[in-house]
Image (tube, rainbow, N blue to C red; front, side, top):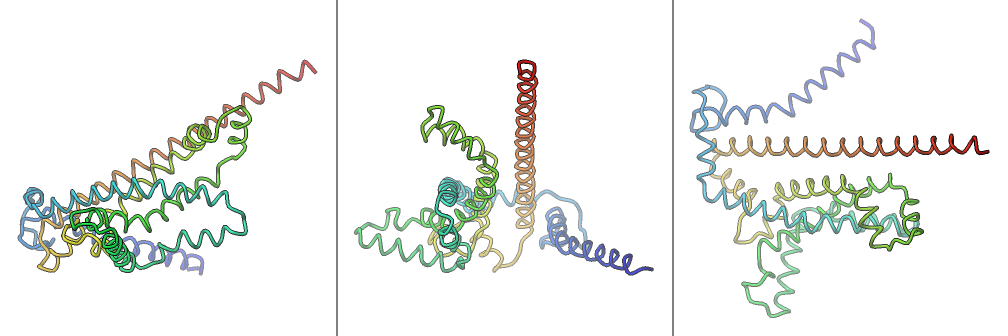
Length: 296
């Protein structure tokens, strides 16, 4: 056997081992959600059942955590996507010498530990509430509000990276042409830039929501007396794993896969529309050139 064949065999073995390591826990968890035993396990198999899914929805604390996580995810999405878009646009407008410094400052929350972000958010708004002489029922001390603010500090940096990747393919001559034709800067933003950034906006929204939904390090400090899905799960795991947690894992995996497929389909459709528009523009240009040649 040649050295090249041995190399290919080793690479194939490594790839198979990697995917087994990656997906085996998910497969085992999924099978445990349908096993009719009181402890989440695959063997011995006691029979197929769906009773752990109704048990999951009957858990009031779990349902409260899920609902809070959804609302927090929507709030983070509504806050971090505009911030990330604004940061990306500013990144393309600042002087080239300042881009490195600006990029470092904006991305720094991503490098900051979530524990530090959670504690600093809690301390800052507590001091601000004390300074404003706010009562403890105000938003300064609201766990939902603090969690949205704390998570948005670093999730907005993720969304900015998505917008930057999209803006690198943007043709600035479109803005200049629109301005030359009499459009205002607001019209250029809404009618030229936003349609071009639509796939990135949906991708950033999905990333922001999913990142918020699974966040724990920052949330555990900012949520205070309220609860989210991750804090409820952490408390339940300390008391012992239950099969309804495996059912929850199956539902989350299913929702994540469906969302990822939907986003990918939307992106590919947008790419096909762009290619079709470019092809149509090229055909129109060739037609105009062909029509101009006899006249010459």
